[in-house]
Length: 438
Ligand code: ADP
Ligand code: MG
Image 1 (tube, rainbow, N blue to C red):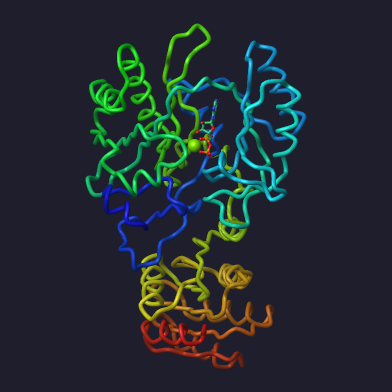
Image 2: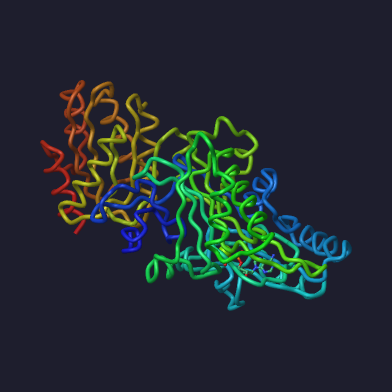
């Protein structure tokens, strides 16, 4: 994590890669968000949930085809809206300042007539958008949000999330909203206001007003913004969100000349452990936005997270998997994934796991670290041998097996004819895998 984490004492939700194990020191691997930890939503979905909880959002319609987009555009103009915004829906921020692979600039566009809006929708749909948060590969735009354009007078940043050091929810806000909040956090953290929330009480009215005043709002807007912030917190708590970010929350001028505060953007992720309570939110999952390997792993009940390194790990138990990655880091290597095959994995699961880690082209060595408490070491060994033979494995395979039925497991591996590197301890295994990957 960059230095701003220290400044805020908090995880920063807009940071390029959402880190999920936030208390870990910087030297340790930072893990990318994954469905089994939290599920990301599209802007239009988050706005729908926010609206249900009373947050003011401009009218709009999602579209999954050009026809749907054109219909939505027509509907907004027909109902009296003078201009619309066509917004690419991808699981990444920075869309406004992004650029499409074909050179078309901006994933968020204003249009003053249906023809222009249709043309913008056409330019975005199916096109690949590259933003600060997508990485070079970008993300294909398969959905659009067509929404009413607002006359913006000021933009603010607001986020609700969990402050792990306090063990409480927190709301953060800044008058320096809009598209460059990361820089504010880095260069002038004092411009970000924080209010800790008592989860038994929710965000209190006075707290909402306090933030509104800190943001520079005056008169009637103080109460209106305060109320919006309370509704925003209610959305976060009611949906079991791990993060809800509104950037910008905007002060707008209405048709009749009055002013109000509304949410113009939304980024939200839901704690997967609470998903069983929200079938409606679960139905919002967009698998096409998720890492294909992670989705495949999920089908086999494997806890897999793709990482950026080149040493693949196959481990039983989440704690041991974390320690294994730390050990790899300690010896100067980089794990290619987190993978916990669980305590009672079957041979089929092990084989599936092996195939998944092998389909990552970055992998240069494979480290298998099994401590068989419940796990039968021979099950792992048989799964590995079957998968290695089937995939005609050429990569170095480092194995550390210990525990239940270990002798049989070692024999299975030794008899397999596979070119194995064996290790007695986890440290030795990590060290050998780092050398092998070089
Ligand atoms: P991102 O954060 O991914 O760039 P946003 O939704 O924040 O996407 O849009 C980028 C910018 O576009 C906003 O900061 C805002 O200035 C403008 N914008 C977004 N939605 C609207 C809207 N409904 N009306 C007017 N301007 C908008
Ligand atoms: Mg935004």
